[in-house]
Length: 179
Image 1 (cartoon, rainbow, N blue to C red):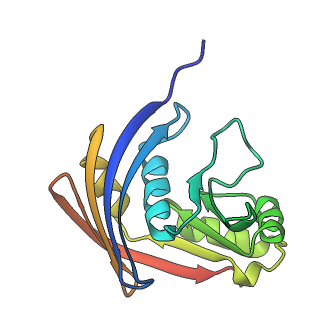
Image 2 (spheres, rainbow, N blue to C red):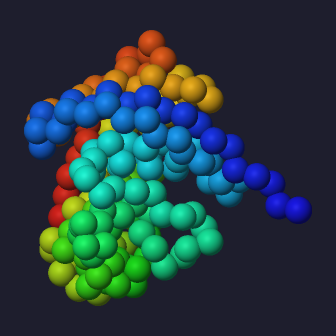
Image 3 (cartoon, one colour):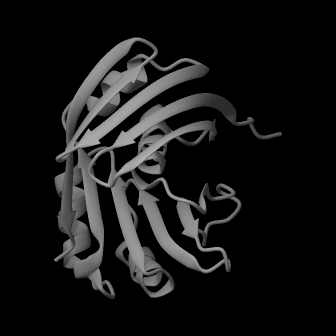
């Protein structure tokens, strides 16, 4: 029998001044045994940064051809494909053919991952957004993580300001294109 996922609960209060999004969301998030806490928290941050109607996590490792996070229109069409970590260029190539918008949120070794993706042959690669986080942002949030979490997240002018369970952390959200 394989180990079960651990579920973390987030009450998100999102103020995204860059996009004009202000929402409160309840977000149960499963941590698969093969995932790190940093990877899971990056999924939560990416969800918050991409929040719009039709957003959802993928069904998990049982659906390897699905995006980690997808935004679908009312007709079910895939609008946005979001990947976490270090996806292969071939996966992003397929993603950019399937969705109008593709984004990658990288939680570690961002410069190395970015350079590998830039070298790959990716359809519409210059349109793909690559995001990385400032030093210590993810680690600071993971250190304050509990099973039930109150996360207030503000995004403005390329910076993230977070308060998780009473702990304040801030850092840069760097955006680059795969050009």
